[in-house]
Image 1 (spheres, rainbow, N blue to C red):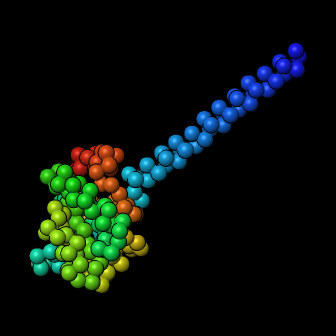
Image 2 (image 1 turned 180 degrees about the vertical axis):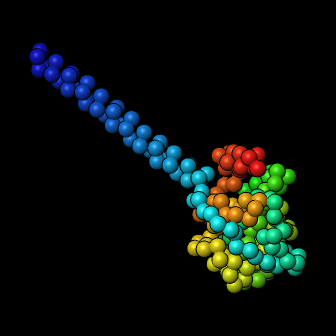
Image 3 (image 1 turned 120 degrees about the horizontal axis):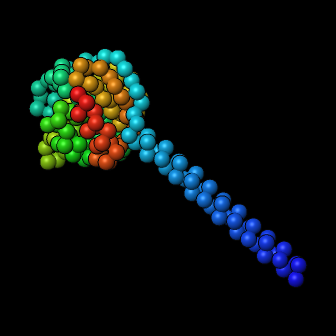
Length: 186
């Protein structure tokens, strides 16, 4: 009889340990997920003046950073051969539509060698945001871009504020909330 009580006690103890271990693992996964989600929204902080640029736009005219003085700019460096870039561009276009009237413009600088692959990439015409061409990658180099996509946030005074490394879903509610707070604080 005493042996049976020990066995039951051991089983209860083992079950409690198992449940505790499971809860710890779930908490560990949740913590890791929270960190990954925070990285979606929390960009690297950067500062200093944004490098000026003057590049050709979709229509063969010139586009420069000075064109956006007084507005927030989300400056994206990308290429047609970059699959991560291709994945984020549709949400970037939607974001531009949502924020352009609020004082934020999306500008995408392609580092492709010429317009042919860029225009083929958008078979229905130019997207809702501005596209400029940096065929020699000089502007990308000025910004210290090391991989694609990389996106910089520039304030209305032309100062760098943030750097997003890698692709994003720009319509993620957390990102939308981040930018809504930003443009409202203007």
